[in-house]
Length: 464
Image (cartoon, rainbow, N blue to C red; front, side):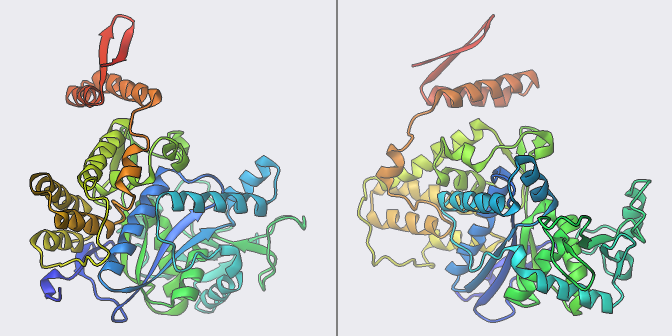
């Protein structure tokens, strides 16, 4: 489909507008997404970002682009050093184990592998080269402690991505700041080695022994592997400031040109009414979820919401997603053998609407509506073509990739722990006087064959 009205549009976080996508090189897309800091198991917030940009990766390939997709691994960081110390193991051992766990999670979620998965510690010379350039442009300085800092006020367009201005940022800073900084907004590019311990994570440089700051790592890896400017830079909304803002400042300050043309940010995962975060102690790891659900259920759960919107995680919501996905698979069940010669015809009215939805800033909720309309036709007409069409459209965003019989017979019931979690969520909803949500949870349990009764001693349940 070559109609200009059908071209992909992306919401650019930098311009705050929906823009028609125009890659720097025709038929090729270079994309960098901030990956994991490998000091612990990946949680649901990580899953949201991983699956959001896997969906973007898949759709760009579906549009015919050659996609060069880089997702980094941060394997040196304060959190890594602290965790390794607490466990009494080496940094390398911790990052190797956690990287392996992350890659297992990615495989279980059905992610396409990135073109490259660079580790920060492999790009120290590139980081130092950028710091040298910043020094030459008087955008960096060495503090009395030996640390190298970026001089934020010297970069005139600082704050353009996040929409923050320096006056507001300065007013929000606390009293009693690091005396080694010329300005409280300045951030570290190179952390001087504080100890003579040869086991400390440190590298030699013209600024003395030390290790990189977090922000400079992504600038170095993206520039080295993709060149700059590249097309798309992505990550979670929590990275927009200060990480991505600092990436822009240090990369553009060093090189004198743009870092990326399009900035994309996925929304948060909320646990109930709170943003999920380790500081609140309300995180769930990907592994926690995969113990009871197929990875595609989690993909479908996130795809029901637009990638930029925040999404509320509850056991009830995830079970609803599982139930809906099972309905799609049940529609495929009568057609166990699919033609390998089947080709998507984007002029088919259902395919065209799916295409239009995805090209409108990757609107997976609208695309999923099309899948369920096709499911309704399959039930009425039992035409193999409709099943093939539904499956192939879903495949473009990583759904319906499992054999229907295999999916439908795997974990088809509901566990006691899931039932109990839903009962607890219903109790919280009633306590908050959210009776619509409480009734919805009760109805979901009934549909799953679970009868609940409220007694003086609490809620009890039984199978129907």
